[in-house]
Image (cartoon, rainbow, N blue to C red):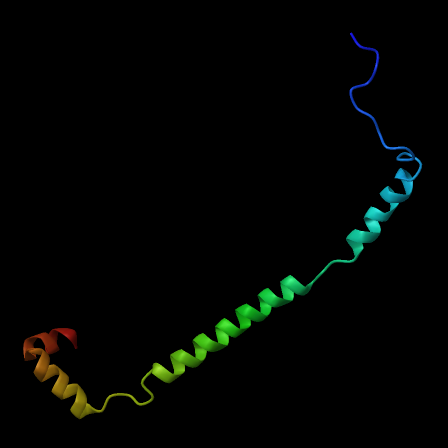
Amino acid sequence: MKKTMPYSTPEGYFDSLQGRLSEIPARRSRINLTPYLALAASFALALLAGNYILTKTAASQPASEEEIVEYLIDSGTTLAQLEDAM
């Protein structure tokens, strides 16, 4: 077996190791909220756009009695079927 190590560390690596390790918690405390805020804004925009589309495409007035009667005549609904439904 060889007595030499198959790997080596750079000169002065362990001298600055403690300083680098103590910086890790400081870096984690600075959380970047930008992606989360962008995601929330995207959801809000999608919700508003969907609500706008639904309100524009929905019928604003209920059907009149004449329109209902015309639909029932055109669809071939019989009086017996209407009585069963009532």
